[in-house]
Image 1 (cartoon, rainbow, N blue to C red):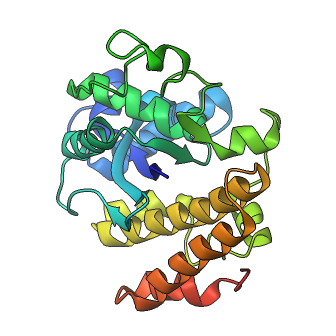
Image 2 (spheres, rainbow, N blue to C red):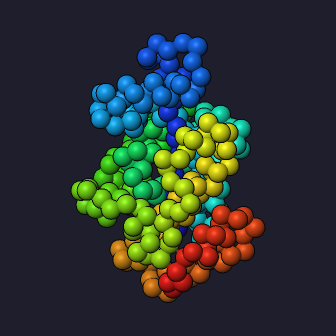
Length: 256
């Protein structure tokens, strides 16, 4: 096993919004209000188009045959381009299978636009066989390849999906609790980046629980191996000194 479960958290890109809407001398809060007003008139929703999402957190769970690690990349003070560099560096180094929930519909396109804006490159992520022939038939970019496994797409059959919270709860994880994505911009404006990073990590954990059950039903692991991996993550959370990891672990059902 060589996987990288990932999730991003975003806020409206006030620099991009101010540039495209020709807004000057406004606070971030007022730029966001203007962006939301314009988008509401255009589409009936305040949710910004993907190219106007700024990444403020990238959290990952890396699992191979020897170790399991969970973290948010960089520091609270890390700039967006630095977060992207850390993310692509891990892909170039380990060439893992990426695992996400709605990653191909949201996270990846946002990462693409933001890396384009900042000029952040990667050797392996963009490879479609030019550097490594194996990537011609299984790469990170093709929607139907599994080098990036989007569990939401696969489980829904590319139709209207269930929510991550619902599926996570049905397989024994707590799903989203405490806060949800609608609060991220509020925490960002309050400079509470740690809260956002903690929340992002719990989304990664929920996705990992779903992934392990998917591995079981798709016959990629045995029932004994599934139990072993579930015990590993429960033990990992229980041994942690991080409050949100311990809380997540305490809310999990012991489904081994």
